[in-house]
Each structure stands twice: as structure tokens, then as C-alpha cells.
Image 1 (cartoon, one colour):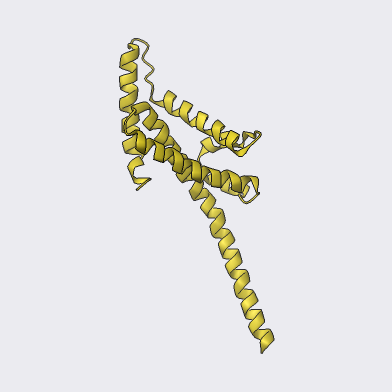
Image 2 (cartoon, rainbow, N blue to C red):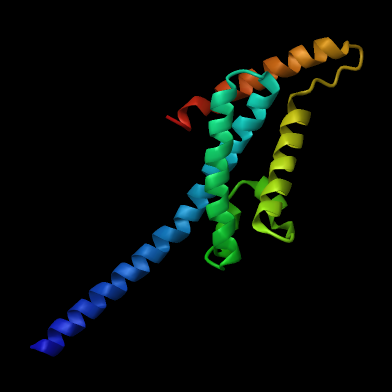
Length: 153
């Protein structure tokens, strides 16, 4: 009797462990997507120069999510096949470096550069002030398209 009960509990425990590991692996994909989206919204907000408090929240929450992701990566908890489901820009943080914060800094710099270049108009005939105004409008439009306001309460 004791052996059957022990066996049932062991099997149940093993199933829970396997299930939680699977969910944990998929949580890293979600963490990557949310963290990257939050940092994109923070970068876009830095161009519009509106609502600095919300921009700070985007940055801090994104930093928390991406810290979890890169900590998991360094601890070997993130499977290589999961990287195919994560934002492409995250590969910037894989370049290595002396610390976790360094990797996050490289990633943040890449996101800022990408957002800046993707919103700056290419017309050479425009004045700098006109370019900055159009860039701000493009950033505002991207913030709306990405539904940044829904990422944080």
C-alpha cells in the first residue's frame, strides 16, 4: 500500500516538474517579447518627449523583464529553440560582455538607434526642425500602433 502511494506521488511530482519546466521555458519567450516591447515604447517616448513618467515606467519594467531573460540565459535556462520565437533585436544582447548590465546596455543602445533611425525622415531637402517634427509624429504614430499604453497599468 505504501509503495503504491509513494509511486503515485512520485509520478505526480515528476509530471508537475515537467509541466512547470515547460511553462517556465515558454515564460522566457513571453518575457523577451514584453521586455523588448516595453523598451521600444520607452525609446519611442524619448523621441516624443511626452509623459516622462510613463517613459520611465516602460524602461524600468522592460529592464526587469529583460534582466530575468538574460539571467535565465546565463544560467542555461533558455533553450536555443526558444530564441526563434523572440524578437530579432535581442541578439544584440547575446554578444557577450563583462556583465549582465553591460549586455542590457548594448541591447538598449541598439533599440534606441533602431527607433531613432526608423522614425527619422530621409528627405535631405527638409530643415532639421522639420525632420525632428516629422520624427516626433512618426514616433507618436508607432506608440499608438504598438499599443504602448496597454503594456503598463
